[in-house]
Length: 619
Image (cartoon, rainbow, N blue to C red; front, side, top):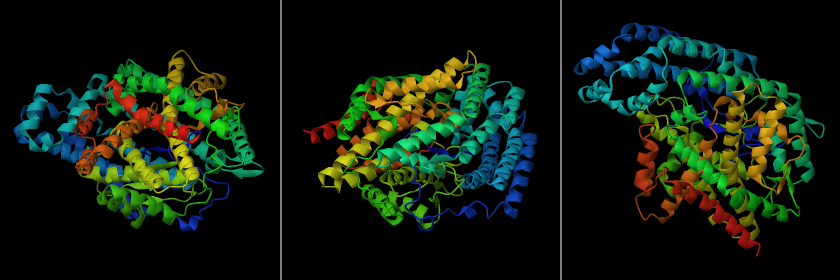
């Protein structure tokens, strides 16, 4: 399933990742569940069977009509063959995306249901078989001479429409393999990486954690790490460690296998660095990511180390245990936030920024595009799935009424607004690289947070809100760069042979100790907490996109606060561009440049200023 991002659970939740409570504070019946009928009415819908047959037939027909002809068509661009082929290719891709989105969303709703699991697996196999007949198209297109492609852009308007997609595609050209090797990689993915991903998901969903004699799933167990009672936090952390430890052999095998799988692919394709394939997919230069990572690492003492030392004092501790890191402050309101209030909070914040943004977000509530309750078997965390431009996005949450859950709602609706606005670009050009995909989501959170903060006058509540925001930002920036460094260590060492569970745990503890600082005591069992982070499994090196997006939005929000007029229109134009522009083009209207090393310092300085404000409250 290809949801954009997003908030699968982390050892401690980033930016409002949904967690939960042992007994849900918001009743399931009070929360919306999505209606997937806009995709298909059910697994046995005749329209679905028709479309599966249509995709299979049209993929074969497309290959028969166009394979071996693209260079010839490029030589006579005024005939319009390349444009016609691309239009047809996009139509087939859109239909495949519709089918795959339905199967993936249905499976996410209950990954423990064997009927849904079989359906999802069967659909994935059929789509893989069909797409194998389309594989030639991008490979052949990339073999056309640059001069001929440029001439075709000008001579064939239909082909010229896809210029951003074709230019983007051709960045993959140096890493492209011979056609039959590419086909083998593609067809074996269903029994390789995809199968290991599915094993991870189904194993994680099936885990149960014994917390004080109660058997809980992952979400409510994680939520215990935010409980006001230290004993509950400790029991939850120990339950997590115990169950992870019992399953460590499986997670170690999955990690080793997928790291080796990636090494083989990278070696065959000729990527120099272990993360270069991710940078290429994100259309971001390695130097930009290196500068981001270096800036964040240098800021550890000023950000996480400093903040956690302050928090330890607030909690009356010399050092916090790792299960105390996200403990609420005594001033934090404990009342649960109902769904209607959460909806009003987010839409109000969006509306104050621009009524257009609130109107788009409102559709998700009005038209059953959100699935909010916690259910047994449901995929953990949260995500926004764009589906296809001819339909609309869907949002999955595990809403339990905490302030962080409201921030998660704001985050995912930011994705949703972005996906709706980018939809007119079409199935091939609507998708945004992960680094920029986080912009609208984090910006939506920032709008919501600032709206709530501005309405808060009681000093204790304001302090608690600021502290929670700082923790969310540390989880998004510091923690995600630490995760990135952990992945780098694991994948580097895997090149020399398999890693034991103990060695992976040592690498985990080394980066966590460095990033969290001396005020956090990493107790026994924490060495297993790497095991369930799905980004490591589903999208290696994905995690730096969170830090990229947060720092970018901090700078973007500063421009917004200083702008007199015109910011909203520029912002909407950025989102509407989808994947048609490089990050340098999208940020230029705001006077921002991510390639400037000083850019990351600006984003980090906002986090530091919030910590300054908190420190001033203690004086």
